[in-house]
Length: 116
Image (cartoon, rainbow, N blue to C red; front, side, top):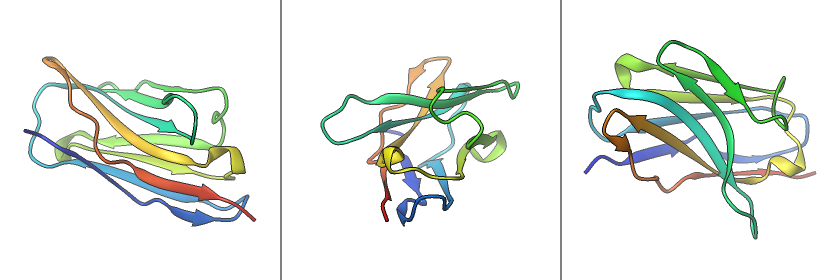
C-alpha cells in the first residue's frame, strides 16, 4: 500500500519560515490533486492548501499570502513553503493525494511548532 511521508517540520519563532515536503513511498499514477491539511491539538483537521495537476492553487484564508504550495508531478512530490509563521500555525501537517481511484491514506504528518 502506498504511504505518504511528510518532512520538514520543526520548531521556529514567529516570523520565520519552513518548507514542508511530502513524497509517496512508491510511484502513484493518476494523481489529480495534491494538498496539505493540518491538525492542532484539540481541533479537527483543517484544509490548508491544494494544487491541481494543471497548477491551479487554493488556500485557506488564514494562510493566503504567507504559504505557497507547489508540486513535482514527475516525482509525486508536493511542497508547502510557509513564511511569516504565526503561533496559530502550530499543528501537525499532513499531505493529501487525491487520485482518479480515490484518496491515498494519510501519512504520519510532520509537527510544526511556532513559539517565541
